[in-house]
Image 1 (cartoon, rainbow, N blue to C red):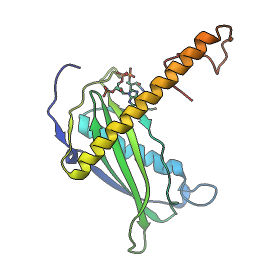
Image 2 (spheres, protein in one colour):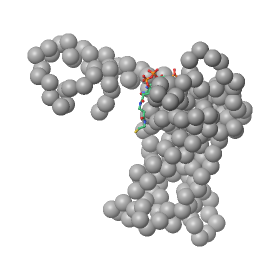
Image 3 (cartoon, rainbow, N blue to C red):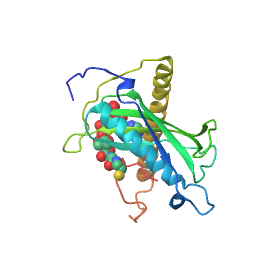
Image 4 (cartoon, rainbow, N blue to C red):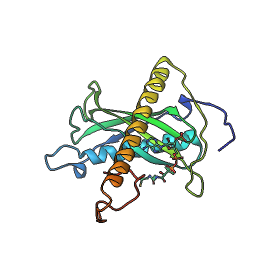
Length: 190
Ligand SMILES: CC(C)(COP(=O)(O)OP(=O)(O)OC[C@H]1O[C@@H](n2cnc3c(N)ncnc32)[C@H](O)[C@@H]1OP(=O)(O)O)[C@@H](O)C(=O)NCCC(=O)NCCS
C-alpha cells in the first residue's frame, strides 16, 4: 500500500436513493422493520465506498443507529450518502435517512443518520489504498472533522476491549475453553 492516489472530491461518489416501503417490509407492530432500513443503508453506503475507491469495499462497522421516528408502510424513504473521511484503506460513509408520504407533498422528516466504515479490498480480500477524499463544502469539512473524532473513538474502544480480554486471559489461566471463551483475543466480538 505504498502508492499515493489522486484525491477525489466528495461529490464524485455521493449518492441518493429513494425507496417506497411496502406491506411485506413490516415488523410485528406494523411499521417498517428496522432491518429493512439498515440493509438499504449498508447497500447505498457500499455503492458510495466502491465508487470512491473504484473497486470492491467491504463493511467493517456500522455505528449505533437511532431511529428518531417510525417509518410507515407507504412512506418514501430517501438515503443520501457520501464519503466523509478516508484513511489508508478505510472510508467512513455517512448516510442520512429521511422520509415523506407517497401520496402527498409533505416535508421530509429525519428518520436516522448512520455512519459506516468500509475497507477497500483487493482480489485476495486484503486492504488496498483508497484515494483521499477532498471535502468541498463547509458541511463536507464539518463531516470530515467529526468523522475523525468517531474514528478515534472506534479504535480506542476496540483497543480497550482487546486489552481487557488479554488481561482477563492472563489472570484466569485455568478457565476451560468453551464456545463462548474460545476465539482469538484480537477478535472483538459481542
Ligand atoms: C476489512 C478487513 C479486510 C480488514 O482487515 P485487517 O487485517 O483488520 O486490516 P487492518 O488492520 O490493516 O485495517 C484496515 C483498515 O480498517 C480499519 N479498521 C479495522 N477495524 C476497524 C474498526 N473496528 N473500526 C474502524 N476501522 C477499523 C483500520 O484502522 C485500517 O484503516 P486504514 O487503513 O484507513 O488506516 C477484514 O477485517 C475483513 O475482511 N473483515 C470482514 C469484512 C466483511 O466481510 N464485511 C462484510 C460482512 S459479511
